[in-house]
Image 1 (cartoon, rainbow, N blue to C red):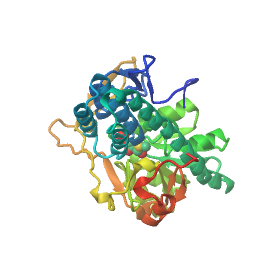
Image 2 (cartoon, protein in one colour):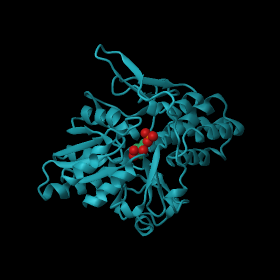
Image 3 (spheres, helix red, strand yellow):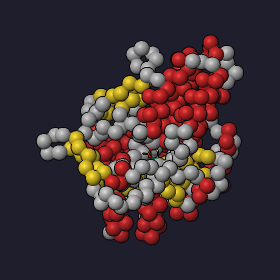
Image 4 (cartoon, protein in one colour):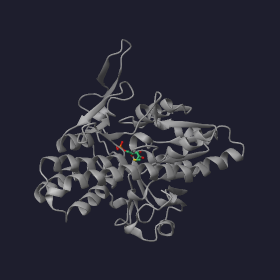
Length: 369
Ligand code: MRU
């Protein structure tokens, strides 16, 4: 998508054909900084510190992290060590495991001397596939916005939580893909952007990328969504997901569940957008999904730009107060109106998912993606 007039992806291979360049998301919205990842450790740190984030982007970054590792040492032991290091970076988004499994499967039976070019080719294919999947999610999901518009919704008001836009993927995004496609087709759309405490992915990232792309939006406090729904100012909600169970429960950024409850109480459709790589077929019940606990600083400190242009962090809590920081929650399938995937829309249920993905865990992108 566009940053100014320039189209970008979130990650690409550097001119030397070896290093990997990323947009450092910890610097947005104040500074647009491209950082070069040279080593496995750089890639692991970028994921852990959330310079890159969002389930699909985490997966592709990990795939390139393996490439960087193999550039140093392509032995079996190094492959296993790199896989394990990357797998430990973040626990909730299942795309991380998905991408590492794909890479290890591709490389395992290949002689070490031949691994490196194959690794880069497979990682590039994962990145390109992610773009195609997200674009297909947009093509399917836009029908939801078109339907509201046809009923007289002008603009179509969509509420989203966290950042599930192009910054969370390689391009297009998941939840925001239908919005970008609607914008492209001239459907008037306006996005209510939850600020998404504690890390403010909505305020810092979703608002930034929508703004760069020219999509009308308004940032709201996380607590405002229910009120706006009561007043009829939200036509539909669309969020992303970091892991979706085989039965349609969705695990997403903390606070998603509360939005789904408010949506249900107000008769507002609550849709969740995802590619097949976010489905964990091995989990039946969302309560089994590991929920990442992040450090207290995300709550106790906020970073912003001062009036004279400096970027500064400040404390906002009494120093002695305890802090708990679960980073994700689970929205049970019964609160989800439906899922938007690269293969189309379906119920958030075992039957719905099985209808779209009859091959289950063996799912691969369909021709349309
Ligand atoms: O902790 P993050 O920022 O990596 O979490 C990402 C999310 O939860 C997003 O909301 C998103 O919906 C899932 S990734 C497309």
